[in-house]
Image (cartoon, rainbow, N blue to C red; front, side):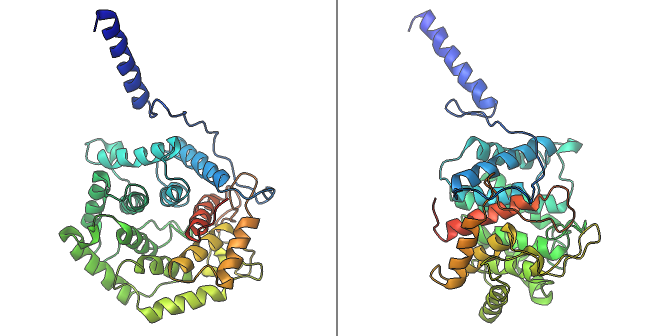
Length: 354
């Protein structure tokens, strides 16, 4: 190879390396997103149902969140990690960017820099659980950074078996230790490579099981999450408890086929509002309940599942999302991000396609 061709070859390699370092492979398009905007209840319904449009909505909202806030969130980026792989097999630039953000976060926790340390125990648990679910739905292998995060949660576990969760009085997520324990349990139940059976996990899981045994679920929302975890992690629910949870969830289905987040507990928002348990069906309530019911064995041929799927297909908005009214304020309704993620998971669980 002469000098000219060698230089050309080296130039090409350098250009490729720069592209990868910038967060995109040579054949990827850069992720273009606008600033986060409030989700509005007045947005028109979509003229045509589209999972692809839902995926685009999840992509843009999640990328915008990490770029603007530089953190994870229970209503946006963590549900995104769970849901996005169910739409397309190939990792999109947005999915890669969000995933890399959390991998880098874990890698730098012990860098010695104050800004890289986890701010809360809940942050470690949520990242570990979400990455584990994402691993299960992408490569099927436990990523080294996921293992590192999962191993770390045991160093933070409290004596009662739960974790010190965020208690900002922002239902349904940042409210109590019980929800954090169910979140961890879901991630552990799905972690690949038999992580739950490893020596590092066994003692902590025994404490977690004891916590659930002696601590009643404070509401049906949290119980639905616990049922999800119990499907792959023994010792969290008895068969009778699972059947009763299914029965209780089915009893809350609306006449239009959907479910309402507000109906799943006696929620009091951070602004003092008491949420209406008889409020309309929404994306998060319908998506979560439909997903866990189907995963728990309620078949697509059952009328409740058919009606839930129909509700989701009919109530997608033009942006690709499903609206969910915030339990806490009327400003942004970011819970619509989680609602859209669970709507996608529910539809794909029931094998719905465009």
